[in-house]
Image (tube, rainbow, N blue to C red):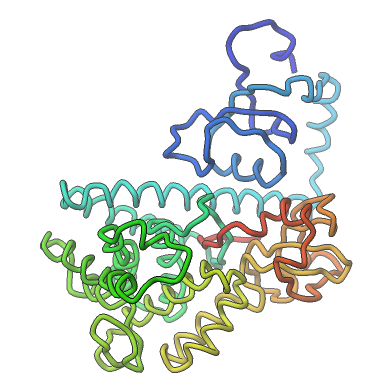
Length: 407
């Protein structure tokens, strides 16, 4: 790289294709526009590289590690160009999936940031907030229908807790996928998406000491938290901008068809179907962040075991079909002994696309099990992974969903 041989005082603008472990880089972004704790990042694993590539920046600033970057001769560049002329179909398919996953990740982060902006305006500029939210809803629906066959991809906002905005986007994605499978009209989809974005906005009126408490809430704290649907409804209703369907979602997204929900203890006949749909998506996404239910499979099992009769059997059946046997985020052991994390749902339920590595964390990479004679052998628990595998797979990071297309 000629640019590395020239003395300079300004930082190197390093293209994303040159990212590798061991170097330290600085992101050319505001802290609000990326999921890392700091702009300055020492790259220690491949997962960090994938996340940086999803941010949509053309380059990063090289801080240190210049000596680790491989020198590339003109001859090497020519050989690379020639090699690219003949592309293996499997290599091309993997490249397309990587591209799709990065796009899903970028769009998810963009949506979370847009949602934060909308929330910040709801009190001071409700009309502006509504316009931004409506625009975001159109983007969500457009992204879902962009693909003939849309799948769920694993994404993250890099947060240790499930923020109101991150949760809202993930719930919207799940709810819209259910609505699409049920062939609901786009007018219902718009109400569903808008309701999902704002369904937990009332939590912003609950003290952080209660919202983020790790230990069990006291009875008074739990009752305060249960008021968040009412707080959200009041915030949106007084603007006069949101229709009855959206307000119903915000007020009743914790209602269950058996009457055991809150705040009004409604039964099935009094809960609109689109509100029931959001209630299910919200319940499932919430279980993914519960301490005892981080595994997508365990979260689904929890719904069957503990919330049987609280949701429509028809809606649960649709959700199960969408998530598949191994929902995105599931930790698995492969038939060849490697371990991995499911990245995207596929038609081949026993051969998903996984980010995999050896049990010790070495040789990480994206694998197409459908292109190999390899299957998922079993589902793993977090404690069954080595430290190396846990780090490479980012096994303890949160689970959220966005739309993806696959070849």
